[in-house]
Length: 421
Figure 1 (cartoon, rainbow, N blue to C red):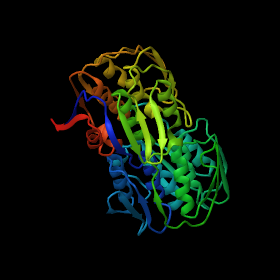
Figure 2 (figure 1 turned 180 degrees about the horizontal axis):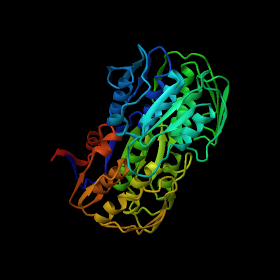
Figure 3 (figure 1 turned 60 degrees about the vertical axis):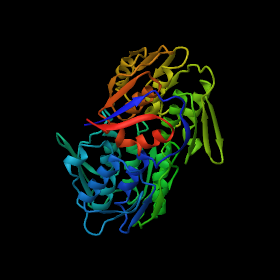
Figure 4 (figure 1 turned 120 degrees about the horizontal axis):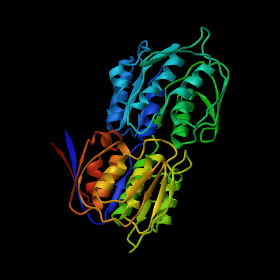
């Protein structure tokens, strides 16, 4: 099993380029099943989750080719299968996103219950609510779900989401683009990844309006064609490197950034005394002031503070002066990293959906695990500020979502090494 060895690194300094967004590229790849012509997706990050999605699409009958680094061509040369492979689906939550395109393209889809990080239940009921509204029959079994469109195909409808689920919004959008009539999704997710998917679909000839607001309207069309699209930058990777600069009291220029996508992170870092400035060449994060102070954070759906940055931000808060409160409202099991940070000397107490961070901790290296993707990033950041060596195991979680993780940190002066145990 591979591990990361992290040592105190001093202030990180230099330039880092952000990769294409993991949470955007996976639905884009699923959407490439919809047209009869080839789609080209640029700035695709080299991630384990991307490789799993490639395997899922291939198993369904799609052809996935890497023409050059970070560029994928996806086409469907023959008939699409409508049953997703169980061994692949169980490895990644986002695999369920193939259900909407399969239902729209083939009239039926069967997908096993998906896997992924154990950060919460993340039920699929809102996805299925949308499919039912479009006229699909849903058949639930112990470990799988099947959807069947009516004989005349899916029909546009109004769908109200009880929670602004990103995955459900994406899946319903992809199912609705080939339905007859108009579909309206109310209380839709507003994340940038939703906008990116809508832009890709519209390039194919779909008619999607309102993406990025709480009401998305899709006017169904009969056919879609191939399209070229570049993935948006990864706002969670951006936030992670912003916090890496902050926790090491460094100065980093982050390139390939959309500042509007990270406003909540920037605002909270500024409250702590970190300088965040946007320039033509990118975004500067400077944390070389003598004393940074604590702030409180509360995770919310976009445009609120992102749940995916909660654990890395908590690692930073453990090192600054003063107490802080972290409230998690999105996932009920997203404090698993707390025990690992406390093992390193942090003083964090959890009560329900709240974590109380004492702050000002003198962190020390320890043997810890990456409890999940973002929790893994959190303990690495803590290791950069801790005395001694931090040994991080179960790093497959980290490698699911960060491209060239070690190389990018080493390029900023971090003392981090990947080893095979």
